[in-house]
Every structure is written in C-alpha cells, then in structure tokens.
Length: 507
Picture 1 (cartoon, rainbow, N blue to C red):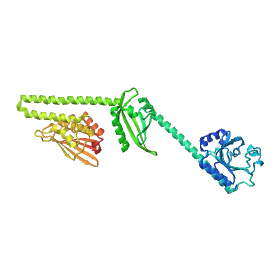
Picture 2: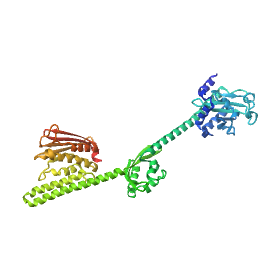
Picture 3: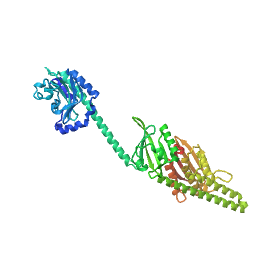
C-alpha cells in the first residue's frame, strides 16, 4: 500500500462486522433521513470537484437502501436513482479503500450489467465507501466515465477521493446530529408539556410584547376556553372591575422588566368568578425576552382572609366601643363628683389615647404613620404623666415606616408598653422607659431600657413578660420584619434589643 493509499484509508471509518446484516445497516441509514439533503449545495460542490479531480464527466454521492441506490448530489447524470441490483456501489459496501473498475466490459461482475451493455454505457467506475461513525456502510462517493481508462487513478486522486468522501460524511453526520437534536428537543418539550399539564395551576408564556402564546391544559379545564384561544384572556375572562388594573400592571411589567404579580378575579367555565394570583417573570432567551408565569386559584384563602379582616374590624370596633363606654362612664361619674374632674379628664385622655394606639395593632385599620417616631408617639401617648411629661422617651434617628411594617412594629411596642404598665417600670410612680434608635450599615437597632421599676426576676418568672406576648413579639420581629431580638432582665429593669434590616421598615 502506498503512502497516499494509507492516508486515504486512515481518513475513513472501517466498516464493522455487526452491520453485515442488512437490517442493522438499514436502521442506521434511516437515522440520517438523507433524502432531505437532495441537491444540498455542500454535497453538490463535492461531486463537482470529484469529477474534475478524476477527469471524468460524472460524479455522485449515492446511498443504498434495500431496493435502490439514490443520488443525493450528482453531476453529469440525469437520473435520481437506479435499481440496487444493477448498482456498482453495492459491490463497494463492506470496504474501506476505494473500489475502482477501469473497464467494466472486462470485469466479470459488470460485463452483463444493463448499465454497461445499454445506456448510458458505463465503462469506468471508482467509488470511495461512505461509512458511518459506528461502522455502518451507507453508500459511496463515486465517479464514472463512459470511456474505459487505460490506467487507474493516481495516488493523489485516490487520496483526494478519500478526503472528499470524508467531507461528504461530515455533512451527513451533521444532518444526523441535527435530527437527533430536534428529536431530543421534541422529547424535552413533550416532557415539559406533560409536566405543565399535570400542574394544578394555570401555566402560561408570552412573548416580549406581552402576547400570550401558550397555556397548559389547566387553562381549558378552568375557563372552558381552548388553549390556543389566547386573545380571550383579557376580553372575556378577567372580571370587568379588575380588567383595567390588570392591563395597567401588565404593561408596566413589560416596559420596566420587573416581575408581574397581581390578584384578580377570573371567570370559571361555570360562569362564576374566583380570585386568582397571577405571577410572571421575564427570561432572556436566544430569541429575546419571554415571560413565563402561573395563575393560582386563591379564592378560598382570599375569602377566608376577608372573613378574618371582617372579624378583626368587628372586634376592633367593639374594643373601641368599650373605650368609649368606659370614658363615658368616667365622665358621668366626674359630673357627680366635681372635685375629681381633673383626675377624670386625665383618665379620659388616656383611654382615648389607648383607642388611637389600638388602631395600629390590627391589620387594614386605615390608620397610617409615615415615620417611626410618629408611630411610637401615638403608641406611647397613653403613658404620659399629667401635664404632658413623657414617661417613655424616644431618642436617635427617625426612620420612614411603610404601611406594611407599621402593624408588626406597633404590635411589638404596644406589647412592651402594656407589659411594662402591668409588671415593669410603667407600673410604678417614677418608672421610665427609654428607646434609643440607631442606624448602621443598612440595619436599624432599637434598644428598649426600663428604669425605676420593681425588681426583675433572674429567671424570668411569673411576673416577667412572656408566654403569648413573647411569642407575638417573636413572630412580628423574626417572621414579619426578618429581624432579631433579645430580652434581658437586668437589675434595674427589663432591656430589649431589636435588630432589623432597614429594608424591612420601608417595604
């Protein structure tokens, strides 16, 4: 074997014996779905160059199935295929090196072949086998001539045919890989759709313009609308009273790129409206931004929350009525005993201050304070001495407080103040409380210190603020405000340290 032949042989994959059985070979051939490459420009360039390289008028990239040989690319011939039984290329299967016939009339395998004895009158043939990566023979890159050749192809031509055959196999391999990738994508999409369809929530996706282009099966089950009828979501399904807000929030999310979240009513297939929570996030993809989201039925939780709010408002109303009744009774008794009027007025003011402070310790009260000192001022007003002297002083930096943070803050300091009034410094004459507020590195520190009260037990005994009140403080600080707190019973009074993230106060 010459050096050029060795190089040419090394370029090609050797056929594997496991594909000697035609059934196994055909299974591999089917994976290429090669007919999609008919007249492929890359393969066409290969056959045209092969014809020039070998000085012949015709060249083809041929594949052989169970009944024919068909030409993916061809030059110098008009036919697209020929029966396999007359194919020269069949004899090249199972080989690695080039198969060459200089004069078919003199070769016993082809002397009686109709392609030799009749049109087109083939005389010369050279075919370099095309073998898949796993060793399955697929066909050949071949050249033919209608004139016999006195000499075989030279080493350079044989090496060139091997190189061109390898290039043809790269194109076929690329086709196979693309098909495999497409099938895998299809399988992945099928798995994702099956997963999405098994969800109890509605799942959807939208393009960068906000046009919804996909719903999972739950959409049809909930609304009764076909999954591909996405235009009806806003026009017919969202409650008319919520439609404007939904559209406005959705457009804002699209323009700002911020996550979308909203609660609104969605019409079910039976015509009833149910409260739903819709969320969506933007995701950058190769084709631009897409939105993926879910719609969750929260109607039962929403109605339960409304019922709790109603109950809380009713309880608050009744508590305020109690303050008003007690205040009225005090005023009535004071009129009977004018000498006690000053005391009665002070008691009345305290009761009214307690009523105002109470507004901050229930959700959705409608009462607001935009600053920490403003909120604390209202909460601590009931504990002022006659004449306006404060028994609870607040020192340090003021902080803005959002409506969401006001309720847990009010719960914490209302609990500390009322416990101090029962057991601590505010329960005796001369007892005081100081609250120092400092800010450092994005956190707010609040130090509550009682002085002048009764002795505090070392073990936090029965007279110490604990139990439900302590659990309430812990829930408000660690749960709602994402902060930390520590309680200490010092010799001169209770001390409480609270450490809160600044963001928790303003969100």
